[in-house]
Length: 191
Image (cartoon, rainbow, N blue to C red; front, side):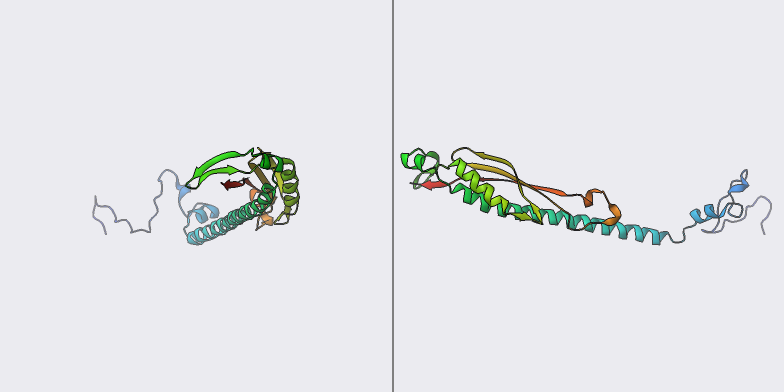
């Protein structure tokens, strides 16, 4: 019992504040959906489910990124083999006439670049690239330049992602990934 002028103690943690002018906000008068939203029952389950779905989505993204990285390494390895073979197409007229470009020097003397037959190198490189398959997709030559002593190429391929999600049809995770690599080659020789 309370004496006059004293107030009743508030219950610890269980009491809800009600606005005296708006009785429709009291827990007993509010609709069921409002009470359901205000209730904290099951909030941990929603949080755990959301974090689980986020973890799964991030795992898919990481798998696709690592797959793209491995595809790029495979494209570089295949391209290096092709450009190396193309760089061995020597321009014999320039080579035997002594028309060579000095690329630098080391302790043994100057280093020269062996001249490359650009037409033969282009044909050889095109032939080698036509045999390369990257994850079931072909490889395209997006740039080829031959400066007489140096080959520079850019290869490009579009590969499907490792994991396709049927629920996210048309999203970034289901589109083709574009992989490209730029390679150079020359034939240095020391005197």
